[in-house]
Length: 190
Image 1 (cartoon, rainbow, N blue to C red):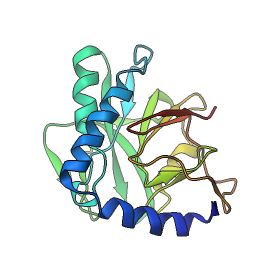
Image 2 (image 1 turned 30 degrees about the horizontal axis):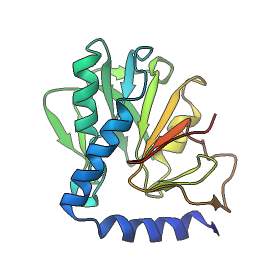
Image 3 (image 1 turned 120 degrees about the horizontal axis):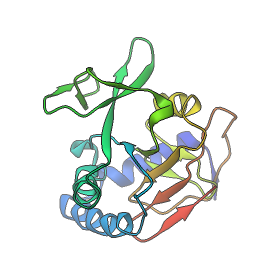
């Protein structure tokens, strides 16, 4: 089925909202198995995101705990959104967190990580298509950030759902994922 990103966003938002807490926990456990199949040994700085439980986002903190245990040399950074400038940057994690205008946790803005230093990024999304194009929440923060990032950046999407066929309205500003992990599969695109 060919579909626009707006249509996909609507369908996937409803699907995600219908998930129960126990269904999310089960899928997070299955996602963790997929994470364990990835070779993280070449990653030194991993950009991640804090999950929004009220939006039933995958629990990235569970995956990070696994990665930190087996690969203690990996440093984590998280986005800070500037909604006035309509952009975001990544900062190394801090023990104290702040809440942004969207209700998302962020580190304190002490140690900016230049985009060229990030090896791997976990990309939040609602869904993705067979070509690795993602549907996010529609603000474009990640697409703008990924456009200025390191060309060799490993872009890993994390999704509860399998891919949709194709989005009919992708454009040159859409940055495709390198791969996407679902509870049942890992899809490679590059």
